[in-house]
Image 1: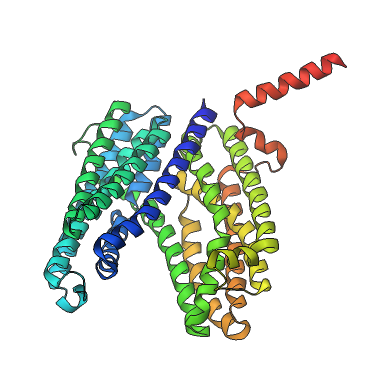
Image 2 (image 1 turned 135 degrees about the vertical axis):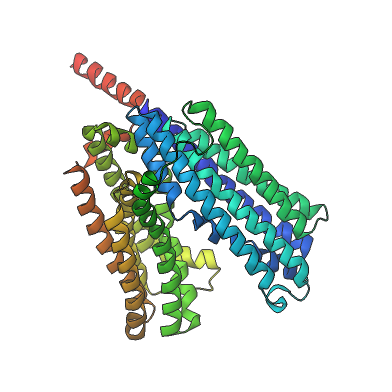
Length: 458
């Protein structure tokens, strides 16, 4: 049954990524044509605000979600209710504070920072920004209810529903623009669809989790305090990653000039394609990993850790080989010959790809059981160090130096992730046999049946 849920989860992740791709591909020509480039560019700048507001729960959604999945797995719905309501108090408090602060900033922003020639004037842009701030805060409210669904084996449903909400948002904005609507009407459409999506998540969660009661009666300060440390550590992971991705690009530009930054970012993007594929397999496994770890089923946990590590290493090695052999050709094809990278840089990025393909999914296993504090803070320190190294290496070896700094970071994180996982669950298997845990039972039964018939014939 676990394999079937994971398989459905993989399909839902694929659906989600397809939705994002379709919306991104459709939005650019539709909005650029309907609004013109100045107004569309202004919309893009304003619509980045919800992305930053998404971190406004300070990691409480992730930490509380992992904890309540474990509590449901142990058959303790009262504790899960306490965790959910305690986290909900914190998230609503943070949401209200952040929204008030964001709206105050919107009011105080000088007009010249908001207006764009050929786009909206400052007054209209200010209203659009306010609506988008409300949208960002509303979007934060779904995380706990999605976790409640995952706790009851509904990862696929939760993920597919969220992707459908994103699809509806994108289509709503496109329809508004094509029908002659303004960015303000598009922002209101965003907010309306997302609000309905949050309500939908609540109803779906309550239909699955009978223990889920709305309100704050069961919330407790003690539970909030217990969630604080893993929550802050959970928030550190995406912040450290974003800091490295943006900081390293800035360091490359400062050390070698703006002209080499596109080379660095293009090769990095190519090297991360395989990682995106692997995460569609890893993420659906996380709720099962959390639940089985909470139940003390360490045999299954070790097998899954070994299977995922083996799969990641194999896929990472294949992707690295393709990058080394065909990376230059792929880069030329992708950029229409505008960007070419040194082969040494491509090779170093390929080796880093293998390390990253293993440690990134393992870090999510640590996060899934709230044992990620040491890992995330080490990552934050290592990311800062890698940015500094990128600057000095680029000054000595050009853009290839940035790839060398990235390889050092990924190698350090691989060692850290493996040590943390061994500390958590002990030694776990590695090799082709470990992959059996990821194969659907039906395929395994067919293979065993074929082997049995072959033996019988002999």
